[in-house]
Image 1 (cartoon, rainbow, N blue to C red):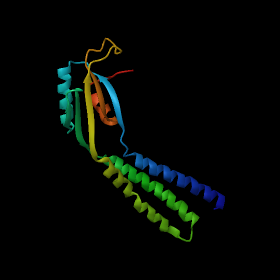
Image 2: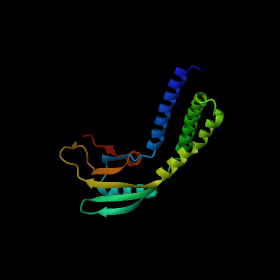
Image 3: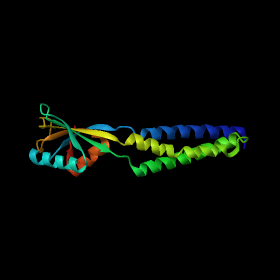
Image 4: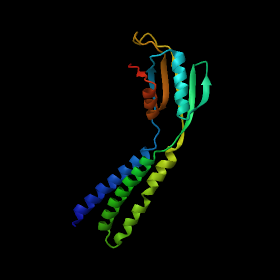
Length: 180
């Protein structure tokens, strides 16, 4: 191969490897959001459903602030086996491409660069260790203010937690997001 083609291919492969590194690192990032949700049932029924939901998901009450009408739930979130395997496979493909380009760039070393593929399972291990963690969901119940549509009859819930947990919570309890 010609040197300009090989060097430009090497540069692109290194840039892709850097992107893959940051993608794997971002897979463990906290995605905490605040959602304002409105229930369609009385507050007592909604509180009972919320407690049942969090009990089923293995959360426990970590703190109660009666002055602010706020409850904080805490639970252990486990990593996804599928995502750990997927990230390891992505890392294997990326490292294989990098090692092939490096073996063309440095032919004297030969196929020793293929040993880089053995590092691929580290991506899954990294994800597994960083993603298995304790998470908190904070829930505050308030009355809808005057800016809220008059058709809303239930209490207003302000929930702070992981994006995926909020989506599951909203779907399980059939809560409507409050449009601002």
